[in-house]
Length: 125
Image (cartoon, rainbow, N blue to C red; front, top):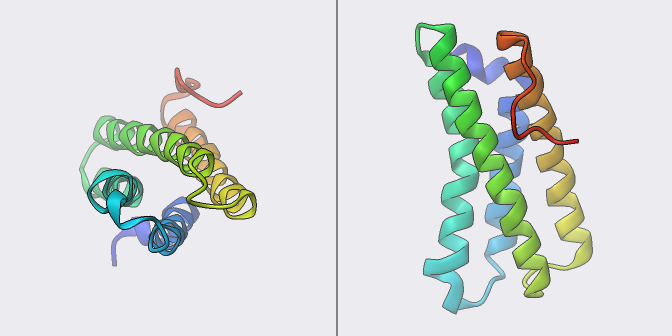
């Protein structure tokens, strides 16, 4: 078992994957190859990049992949807002997704800081 599976951030990002997949099952068929596909690829990228970073041999590689995961987390944040604005999800579901994603972002920011002693350039305020 890889060390990434023990990380709370990886586990929470896997929860986010499941919740986004569940939410997007209700989207219009016209979005299957648009927003649904984009959201699913994006959210899967978060735990995947955490795992890949931890599977590499160097701290620099780990930080690189954590930054990619953080970028995907920022991307899914935007896609959740778009989904809410288009009424594909309701306010409650959007808030739940945003809250879980915010937790993931904060944990990624912390891990990056812990490894670099620098606040990520595009961190949350």
